[in-house]
Image (cartoon, rainbow, N blue to C red; front, side):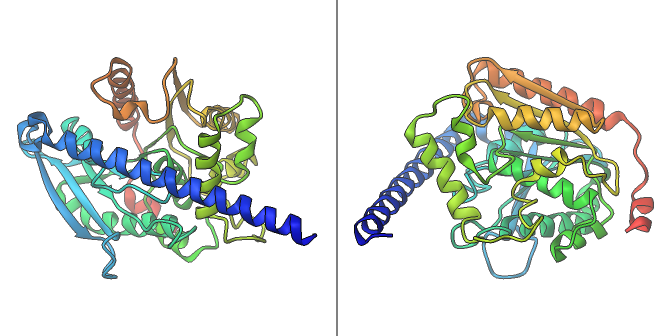
Length: 344
């Protein structure tokens, strides 16, 4: 490569990085401010909804503040309660359980014992740090949820955007025997979710340019998608076969790999104007080809993570349909936990 082309390439990379940093700052500022303003509303007080919150419990004793979770539980409902393990979104490099307090509150209002977890963020902690963390959180839940009134035989993994990716990756760790040590520990818990709800998720982080082929996306959207790839998996320049499966969980299902334990039912909501729409469509096709129950819901005209804006009609509809699906799934009998443990 000539010095001139090398200089141009360096300038382009710098510009992309600066745009990515700007988008990160805007995203963190927007969602952080929205979350803080939401907390000021009188109806955001969990006590008004009969919900108790226990904050900042360490699920790993590392001293890292990201290895903490919050518990939301109905204060006046007898247990045992169905459990939700919720993973926040933010393109793997921003936001937190604190910005996503509303999700924990919404599930607890519906009668769930909700564990709203934090995990380490890229680029300081790239893939597979986040997957390792959600596996560790599952281990903690396996050991402690019953003490908080939870029913481990009625377990849901949920998350939006990057959190939906992690919920799907965690499902794979529970249902497939994998080589990663953290995945082996998750598998050894014997837990398998009854249902999974990955909303508007990037189910293939790599090759983000594929999303721009079917419809032209704005440059700032492409920058976010490319930045997600660069910060989360960009350090893996020559990954071994299967090494990126838990960043691209969609590929596992599209390969029709037979699980070691039966896959759970999936509820996958997304707006039709979401740039990640094609990933949800691919997941729906792949799971149905494997005879896995999958209910994909497409909300006309809605953008990414629209369901977080719970005062809007389509968001409320999405929550109603999600909770209805989960209630039906949780009514289906599953094998007792000890039988799964015996298989581990």
